[in-house]
Amino acid sequence: MNSEPVTVTAAYRVDPGRESEFYAWAIEMLNAAASLPGYLGGGVMGSGSASSQWHVLYRFEAEGPARAWDSSLERARWASRTGPFVQEKGTQRTSGLENWFKGPVRPLPPPPKWKLWLVNLSAVFPPVLIFNVLVIPFIKDTNFLLRTLALCLGVTAMVTWLVMPRLQRILKRWLYPPLQPIRGRHRRMVADGPRARR
Image (cartoon, rainbow, N blue to C red):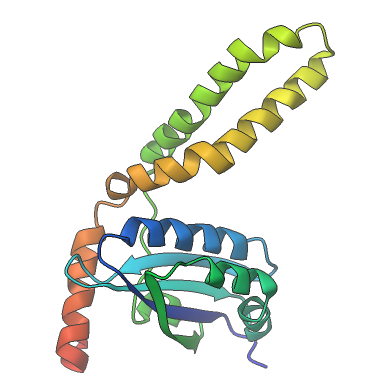
């Protein structure tokens, strides 16, 4: 069994106009994979605005954890939730650290920290405000620790399942401005074949 990091790249064909749905699905699937031991990271990559080819890649610290994710019920559940507008076209596995950086596709670079701060503030402030206006007045006589716990539970749930997924879809292009140049470069590499890699 390979003990080097393993990168798995899955190719998908996505119907035109459904890219944002696919992107949101892929990010949520990667978040599910992140809860497994040995997960090292992942990314989503499009092949260009004129193409329907997308890639989801994820990396595990060894072959064992990668195969455990591939054969897990959780992975099967996510695969069943793609919808008829997505077709999985196959996967490619590579091992070693350099393949994570030099593979057929590259993960999106992380957004600047100030953008992440602004998105987090936008996601947290409305639920905190709503909770303080609508809930806290009814539990103001309860223990301070219980009030704080209720606030954290309510706000965390709203941010995780309601606010953040929508903000990610709305602000995707703002968070990842290099996406179009990267996609264009990848599309040329696919069209030109090995000559483009020289």
